[in-house]
Amino acid sequence: MSPFPPELACQRVSVVIPAYRAAAFVGRAVDSVLAQQPPPAEVIVVDDASPDDIHAALAQHILAGRVRLLRLPHNQGVAAARNAGVRAVDGDVVAFLDADDVWLPEHLSRALSVLDAHPEVDVVLQDFDIVDLHTQQHHGSWFALRHEALARLRTTALDPLTRRVEGGFVGALMSGCFVHMQATVVRRAVFERTMFDERLRCSEDVDWALRSVHLGGATWAVRAQASGVYHRHAQSLTADLTQNHERIERTGLMLFAEYLNWPRLGASDRVQIRRALVRACLDLGYFARSQHRVADAWRFWAIGLRHGLHHGLGLRQAREGAKLLLSTPWMLFQRLSRRRQR
Image (cartoon, rainbow, N blue to C red; front, side):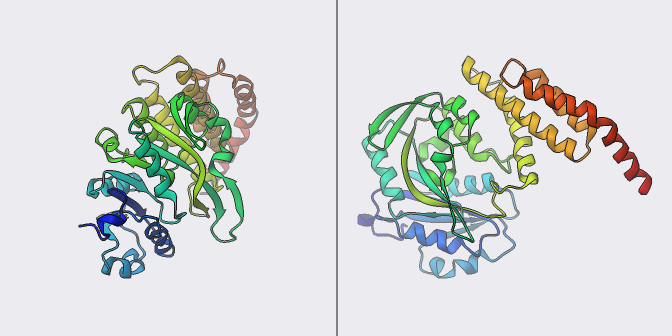
């Protein structure tokens, strides 16, 4: 049963919020959802076995019937949490919000106006402002920082702010990540064809977006107006931490190899995937070299070499190979020294 009278819900919209170590700010995220004009039919928070007390943070909302709380038996990652939320929804449209972010009051109504006016559109992606969670410093908008990738899309105007994607989605997303799930509003039918990959602890949003289009046939629309705030902080995956970057690049390397086996993949998309694969190899090789992991550094360089050179990254690959040759004796010496110290 919806906690809101039918006349207040413009249609059956379900909101899914995965939460992990989010007790300090999930209440603010939920408040921004309940402040939507009009409000959604239901709000589902998925507690991914968080060590803090998500239930206590939302106790008043839960008691009032404004929020349903699902708790996973053990921590499984955001992909599994989103899937659990999707399986529990009653709505025909699903919107996602991360527990540390917030929506502006018009986020849902703007996206729903596109879905209502254009039945062929399955997913609406809106812009977000990027703000430091602690200092409130503004770092621009999500789309502005990814304008080069978005410019690769082939689109048709639906209204002054919204464009339907007609092609180039795979290649564009390979050149720069412009998808963020808290900015998406999705017809539930899309999830009958494409769920999140629960193997992934990062990059699950990009992977889902690519598969929804190339394998699931979903049609996306991009709306160039900020409708929420993405909060950057030390725990976010986009934080400038080497360990996060390395994890993302390792995930990407695995996924890119899988994408190259997709059927009906266009030549230009294949080139963009190979370029992304080579860039991941170069970054991973750099991380390995900086940590004196000789075998890993050479392995990543060799994988990149197998897919590269003719994709515009040959000079960077040659430089990395030269650095590896020069630094290998020193890296081996460092490893030998550490072993002797033990």
